Amino acid sequence: MSDVKLSVIYYSATGTIHGMAKRLTEAGKQAGAEVRLRQVAELAPDEAIASNAAWSQHFDNTKDEPRATADDVVWADAVLFGSPTRYGNVASQLKQFLDTLGPQWQQGLLADKVYAGFTATQTAHGGQESTLLALYNTIHHFGGLVVAPGYTDPLKFTDGNPYGVSHVTGANNDAPLTDAEYAALDHMAQRVVRIAGRLKGEG
Image 1 (cartoon, rainbow, N blue to C red):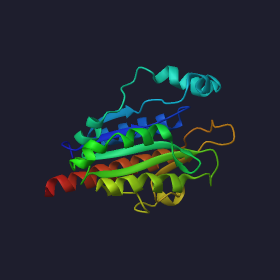
Image 2: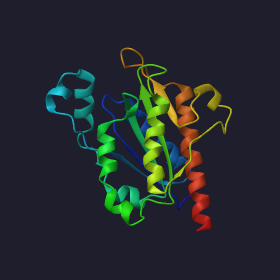
Image 3: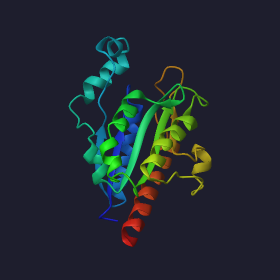
Image 4: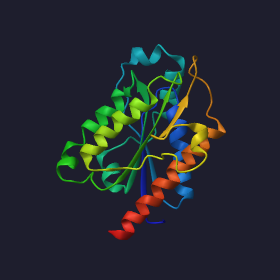
């Protein structure tokens, strides 16, 4: 699968989605893909960021990392999008990035690629599934191929999310990722790369 190109594009406020994105990047590389890790631009005002110490710290720690562009989606054979949930929906920062892709969509440059998503919430029923399903509405309009993990490996019965990969951060928003999430992230990256490779081979 050395010719598969994978983009991991995400928004993270306090670092959880960033950690998941990094794990997916490493898993994609181990699966043989060429990988781009990109975060979308922050839209929140400075005072909102400053009001949360973890948000402010993460913003400072990642401010020099490369930002996602339309080319990162066009270039890729497969794209993994990550967002924390916002009222059961995709965060506005990632949604704004998706909304800028109209010119590429009109040219058909976003179609026939493999897509999947990852998210995090403070509570177990805090919108993980609805956030991923909302994300996939956009992918359907792209003409993309949603390759959600389903229950394609026994480990998915441990992490329990067939729609993608998700993590519960807890009331204080600081619960670390566990082996269950790492295994699920690895599986999703490997599966996405494998399916994208098959599609390229048939192209």
